[in-house]
Length: 294
Image 1 (cartoon, rainbow, N blue to C red):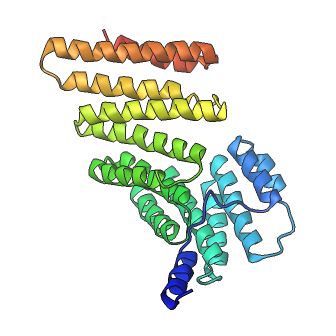
Image 2 (tube, rainbow, N blue to C red):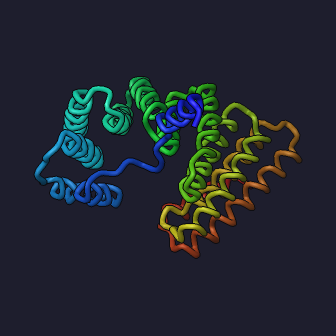
């Protein structure tokens, strides 16, 4: 192999990007599953383990922080996550530690958001993004971008929201796992539809909402997971765009047509909700929006 060929190989290896989402030891995975299912107290019990390494301590602080967020103990969450951050920063430029630090920063941002400090949340989420871009996977970078967008939504910074979401669509396309890629694309398109609707770009908003509906339907086929009712809520997003569009139209016939399109999407959502046995409050919400279509 030539000298330059060897340099290229070494460079490629050095910049090879990790894939997927960083996971910890089996005890950490168990606690994460409990947190994901809302069993926060059980997760804290599962975290009573012998911590042997700095990374173990970081995972413990990270997961404890998530459990405390779920229990709305935000002071405890902040303390646990800051302890994890301190452990990871002590590891210097270790790539694994920096990748984990991105996860911790992202959840520190979440604590600020829960406390309604949205500007600080966005600031911290950008720190998480910087680390994810350098050390994390495309999936982790995408998650950071979506976190930033949620902050933008709270402060109604639609210009930044649109920029971040378009970037997130580009990153989502780089995710190699088809299931994770489809979910990421669906999330980005759904959120972008809402932002474009806010700024009056209704034609593209409809396109993005339709793309989200198609992606969520595909994701549900891939996974068989209907618990989140994602395709149903995608119909709701599309209806919401049509209703917002109708309010901006002066021509009464055109506005009526847009409300008719919204009604169609909500009726589809209602049928899906009935088939899925969704809770009554969701039917109440659909009925309320249907009344706006008349």
